[in-house]
Image (tube, rainbow, N blue to C red; front, side, top):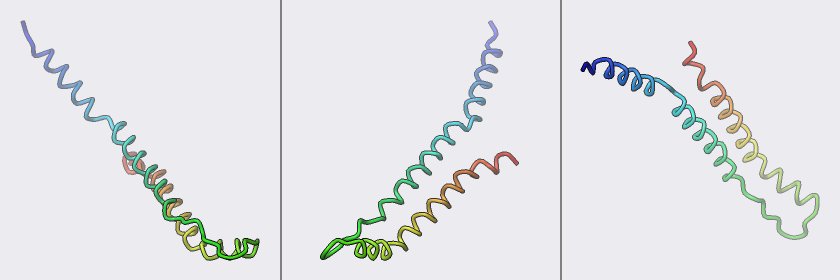
Amino acid sequence: MDNRGDNKNMEQRNRDVWMTTQRIETLVDGIFAISMTLLVLNLDIPQITGVVSNDAIWNALVNLWPKIFTYGLSFVLLAILWHWYPFPRHL
């Protein structure tokens, strides 16, 4: 009985399993999603002392705008990197 044919089939199946990128792509998608979610943890709820009015809320939001801008910019940059991540594989 010749097992060479079975060995070749097994080698081909092993090669096919290792050549697929679906699992690594899923892992990368998860890493990007988690990192984009963790960005929001840097945003704090502003503490308003005294009377809560529209002016006090606007002042608190104006003081918070650098963090909001940084969050938005980081989120957009990660989204762009995530979108273009598989691009080099298609060259």
